Amino acid sequence: GRSHWSAQTYAIHHLPPDTDTAAIEPMSFYAPGDRALLQQALVACKAEGRSWDLELDFINADGVQRRVRTMGEPELRDGKVVAMIGVIQDITERYKVERRLRAYALTDDLTGLASRRAFNEQIDEAIVSAREHASPLAVAIIDLDRFKEVNDRLGHPAGDEVLRVVAARLRAADYLGDYLAARLGGDEFVVLLRGTHARERLAEGIGILLSELRHTVSADDREITVSATIGAC
Image (cartoon, rainbow, N blue to C red; front, top):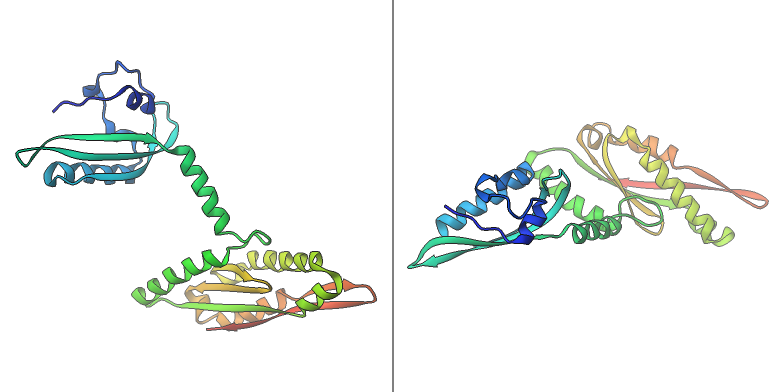
């Protein structure tokens, strides 16, 4: 029925080191969802002797949101839990770096669309969800026609600009409903569609997309019109 905090534990909570721990409600420092996770871990440790290792959202006494790692284990005597010993670490900066690295990995650097890796993660989840709920799902693969001609005649900077234009038009394709657009690599893009636009309105949406993705590039004495070929299932 007693608790003891180290000086650094008080510091992480932004509380004076002489604060009476009996007057503190430790769970109140955690976001509601994460609070429930920690509560479950404490109950399991006390009742079954399970240790825990969790990363949780945390709000200190000054109202500043942080990220903490909390670990704990039981102290046993004659096979019974007589105490719980834990460690808390402020991992906010590491967490921010990891989030930035993940966002970078999931974003195509040139176009700002979702990357191949992001699409692969989304499609796996979408297929499972579609099967479980019998919900419509469609995938449209997009190849750009005459893109190689732009690169060969005008150079890669001009080709990169075409890719950025296509990406901008894909981002603005609200007529596709609930969708995710990603660049798979080179001049290949993909769109993941859900809901009615993945079934009843699929052909209509692709027809509009074919029109929207046509883009004309000036090439010295003539023009190169880049268009799209789309296959969907």
